[in-house]
Amino acid sequence: MSIFIRIWFFFGLIILLGLWFMSYTFNQQVKPNVRQVVEDTLAENANIIAMLVAEDVYENKVSTVQFDAKIQNALNRKLNANIWQHNKKEINQQIYITDAKGIVIYDSQGIATGQDYSRWNDVYLTLKGKYGVRSTRSYEKDANSSTMFIAAPIYYQAIPNQQQKLIGVVSIGKPNSSVQPYIQKAEDQLLRQAAWITLLSLFLASLVAYWLKHSIDRVRKYAQALAPVNQIPYFRSAKELNQVALAVENMREKLEDRAYVEHYVNTLTHELKSPLTAIQASAELLKEDLPLNDQQQFASHIHGQSQRLKTLIDRMLLLTRLEKSKHQIEIQSVNLSQLIQHVLDQYASQINAKKILCLLDIEANCTIQADRFWLQQTVANLLDNALDFSPESAKILIQLHRQSHQQIQLTVFNEAEWIPEYALTQIFDTYFSLPRPITQQRSSGIGLSIVKQVIEQHHGKITIQNIQANHISSIQPHQQGVLVTISLP
Image 1: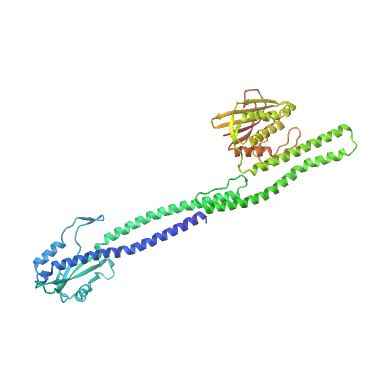
Image 2: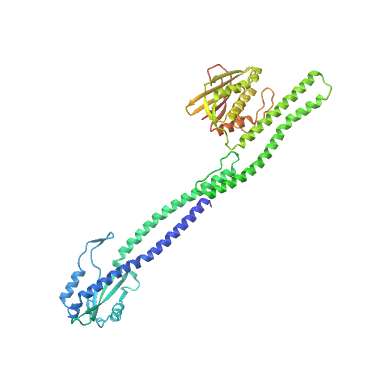
C-alpha cells in the first residue's frame, strides 16, 4: 500500500473517530439539556399557576364550567412564534389539580377527575414538601410518547397573619414530543456541520499526505540520482525532512566519492594503457642502433604520445573539478566576443598548419554573466573538436549574435563528414569518442562532456547536428558538416 494512502487513511480515521466521539457526546447532551430547560420553565409556570388558582381551589371553583373555560381558553390560545426557525402555533401543555389528599379535582383533558394521584411522584413528593416531578410514557416501548409533569404546592392563607395551609397540588405536563423538533434540528445541523468538517478534514489530510509523499519522493529521487551536481532538496518548516536529506547527502557523497575514485582509476588506467604501451615500444626500439631518420620518427612518436597523455590527464582533472564543483561557479561579467577571439589566437598555429579557413560572424561586445574560466574551456574544446574532425583546407564558421535581450546564441560549424546517427545520441557522454578521420585515433571522450556540463550549469542549452551545404550562412559557400548550437542566458 502506498504511503500516501496509509497516511491519508490514518489521518482520516483519526479525524472520523474524533468527529464521531464529539458528535456522540454532543448528541447525548442535547436531549437532556433541552429537557432540563423545559423542566426549568415548567417549574416556574407551575408555581405561577399555583398562586393564581389558590383562591379557586380554596373556594371549590375548579370544578365549575367557568374555571374550565378559563383554562381551556388559555391552553387553546393560538401562537405565531418563530423559535429558532421553528414556527410554534399552539400551546402543548396539560394541567391537573389535586386536593391535599392527592385526589384529582380538575384535569384540563377531562379524563382524570376524581382519580387518586397521591402515589404519582409529582403529587406524592410535593405533598411531602419536596420537589415533585415525574415522566410517564403513553406507550411503554416508545420513548417519544413520554410526558414530563412538574408539580407545585398550592398554599392559601384564609385568615391574615395565619400560616399558609397546603390545600392542593397543581401539575403541568408537557409532552417530550413537543420539543423533539428542536432536538431534531440540532441533530440535523450537527450532522451537516460534521459532514462538512469531515470532508474538509479529509481534504486537508490529503494535502498533508501528498506533501509528505512528495517530500519523501524528492529525497528518494535525490538519493537515486547519479549526477554529482544534483541540488540537495530543502523543505520549508520541515526540520526532520531537512535532516534526513542532509543525512542522505552525506551518505551519498561518501558513496559517490568511493564509486567516483574507482571509476576514475579504472578509466584512467584504461586510457593510459595505450599511449604508455606505444611509448614503451618506441623507447625499446630506440635502444637499438637505428638510422637517424628512424630515431627521429620514434622520438616524434614518443613526443606525440606524451602530449596525448598530458592532454588526457589535464582533461580528466578538469572533469573532476567540474563534477565536484556542485554549481559553485564564479559568475562575472564576460565579454564573449573578446573571449572567442582570445581562444582563436591560441589556436592560430593549428589553424594555419591545417590551412583551415576560419570564418567569423561575431557581434561586438556580447557580454554575459558567466564563469570566464569554464566558458573559455568550452570554446576551446569546441574549436579543438572542429579542428580534429575537419580535413585540410576546410572551413570553420563561428557565429555569435544576440537573439534577444535575454539570450545569446553561439554556433560553431566545421566542414567534415557527418556524425553517424548512432553517435548523435551519445556524443556528449563521458568517455565516448569517435576516431579522428586522419589518424584514426580516438580522444579521451571528455571534451564534449565538459562542454555540456558547463552549459547546463550556466542554465543554457547545447545541440549538435549534421548540416547540409549552404544551410547556415551566406558568408561563403561550404560543404556539408557538423553544427554545434549553444544558447546562453
